[in-house]
Image 1 (cartoon, rainbow, N blue to C red):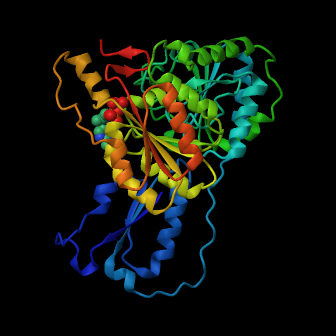
Image 2 (cartoon, helix red, strand yellow; image 1 turned 90 degrees about the vertical axis):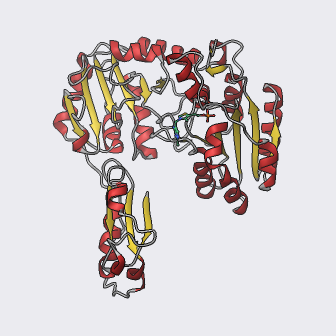
Image 3 (tube, rainbow, N blue to C red; image 1 turned 90 degrees about the horizontal axis):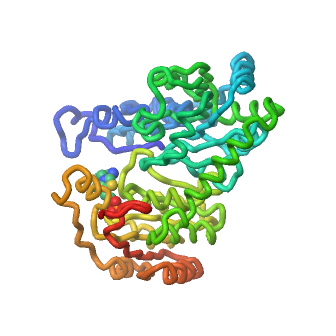
Amino acid sequence: MILFIGQVARGMMEREAFQEIDYRAMFGPMAKWVAQIEDAGRLQEYITRAYRTAMSGRPGPVVLALPEDMLYDEAPVPRPPAKVHAPRYQPGPDPMAALQTRIATAQRPFVIAGGGGWTEPGIAALEGFAQAQGLPVAASFRSQGLMNNNHANYVGHFSVGQTPYLEQALSASDLLIAIGPRLGEMTTGGYSHLRSPVPDQRLVHVFPQAEELGRVYQPDLALVSDCESFCLAAAAWPAIKPDAFAARTATLRDTYTAFSSPDAVPDDPLAGHLAHLAEVLPRDAIVCNGAGNYSGWVHRFYRYRAPGSQLAPTAGSMGYGLPAAIGAALTCPSREVFAIAGDGCFMMTAQELATAVHHDLNLTVIVINNDRYGTIRAHQEREYPGRVSGTGLTNPDFCAFARAFGAQAIKTDGLATFKAALAEARARRGVNLIEVPLDPRYLSPGKTLD
Ligand SMILES: Cc1ncc(C[n+]2csc(CCOP(=O)(O)OP(=O)(O)O)c2C)c(N)n1
């Protein structure tokens, strides 16, 4: 992402002029690079560098501040800029040979794939590598849309909530091949499922930027490579230990299938809704969400099946789902787009319904309404039972609210009416809202306040 942002005129800087902000200080800790362009003659230099920075290594946002008077300057452009491509980093032959040896001597290998900058050929090669070597692949936090969740080697994802079978499989592994993820707090269960700084298992960490390797976990083998180059090279290997890992991978796959089935949580009021979405939506549907306990149901029971089918905030910010869905609907008008939000999450950016209607977009917002910040209430009940503070919400009538923007809206009452509402929304297209009331006692799949 490149954010171009207006700044006060150069002659007014440092006076706290009207709307003057020091953007380097404001965005410095959260962007990959922040700069202010004070000389129109250097626009091309800054903008080309912005693209290169945003797209290379670990992709990330760049902020460029534009002083108002600079924008009126004229400057010659001697030559148009060269097209910027994300740089490729090929893995060297020695570490690749070393990895083959590691696989040959492993008993319980485990792959975690994730992070940014993946390409479709890279994802296909990841699936090919896993299949040829019989390896189980889990997705890192919010990278579930990476590998087809119906693939025989996909075994689940690491998330905010506990996934005991995955955590156990990770802890018991003797070779961890991390392809692209940061191995951050969410993926490692607060740095507890993987011992730091030296993990119990041999760690092979593949990442497109050297600075990330060894940041928390010391790798046995560190490979600076982009995920596509690594996976294409690894996918070309014949089976190193034919059939040695197949049984364990199949068991993990069966466990994932059972865990992500609504049957795992009998009487749960939402699991069936998400399983139904996975059943009827096309594989390339784009499903967006923000933050809240409701997302636990989305991630566990929906099945992402195509690249780019999951848009969700790695930073855990509420309100992300609808704006993300608007971006997706604008960028991919031929794909079906859904935003799933809790009532609190939806209300953070609900006014964007106007944007969606204004641009005649096709998207459906599913609001899971429990009339509270359920996540925070759960924390309160766990730490200070009975001491409820500031987590109740008095919401608008969501359907009337959506209709006021010109959207179409249906309130559901159980799975059967949800199925009907979904079919209706998909058939008529445009901007739709489906309200799904949720009994506030339900905190997460299979777990109630009681
Ligand atoms: C912008 C932002 N503000 C606050 C939080 C902290 N937070 C995380 S989840 C949550 C409540 C979410 O409520 P809701 O969307 O209704 O979902 P529920 O937990 O009830 O399923 C809050 C306040 C956050 N992640 N992002």
